[in-house]
Image 1 (cartoon, rainbow, N blue to C red):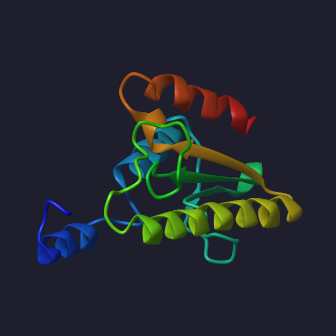
Image 2 (cartoon, helix red, strand yellow; image 1 turned 30 degrees about the vertical axis):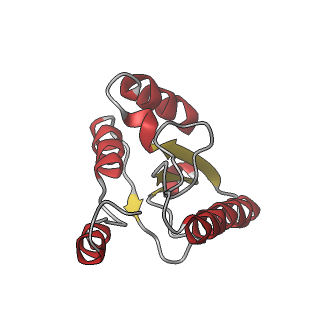
Length: 136
């Protein structure tokens, strides 16, 4: 049983953004401060990567742990209502992620992932520094 009314749940879900999320903005600000220049959500590339660094032929996807089924993460918990529907949705997201990864690799792009949980205060510095290293 959901703790919110149908209207409240609908409103909450409508407020979830797909672009310019807090985790994405953290990564973008960090990269820009380090001198990296990038493009955002390039429609011509498979999966419309969140961040595209053409100079390095690299794309970065900033994934939400819940929406992309981050296995073993405490932020990924399967909902107790409409479980079958959510399981199918998240499985489809994971499948699409793999498909885009392969398509981008075939086109010669390096694909990097940053998970939402890696951008929490205790892990953020380490994650972003590792991202810089990966770019070279």
